Image (tube, rainbow, N blue to C red; front, side, top):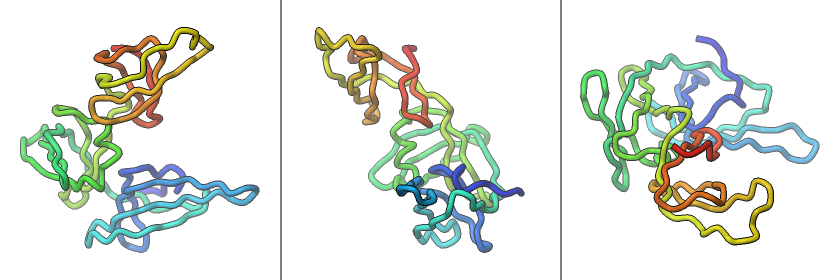
Length: 187
């Protein structure tokens, strides 16, 4: 196992620090004036479930955790848990909604994901680079709003809110980048 730069961590990343394994729940990059940038992480200890905050400088690195990956399918979510099925042995498992809140915005029933396992226990998921979602609601295009690269707000079927070009209408299916939350094109 190697090291990973603290600024390369993202939501769902798993790392080791002081002989403990953590999963990142929330990643925040903070730059203050002329000072050095810091990385603030909200993390959950995998062994005992305790949630804490960790702060790193941009130059610091952490130990990469030994993680197994397996293909899975999203089934559904309720108020507290999201349910998945392994594509390899068809077993079902659950993850706390709080742990994958941002990822849930990109998942509909049947979505394919990669599950991260530590010691045989599912701890997080990885999304594909892009997903296809249907526009549930969007503002109508207004005549005269034809400036270069004009965008409007749209809400996807999962509740995700992004900016889309003016020509898109409700009910259209679009491709979205899961890392930048950007519209990539029609499907």
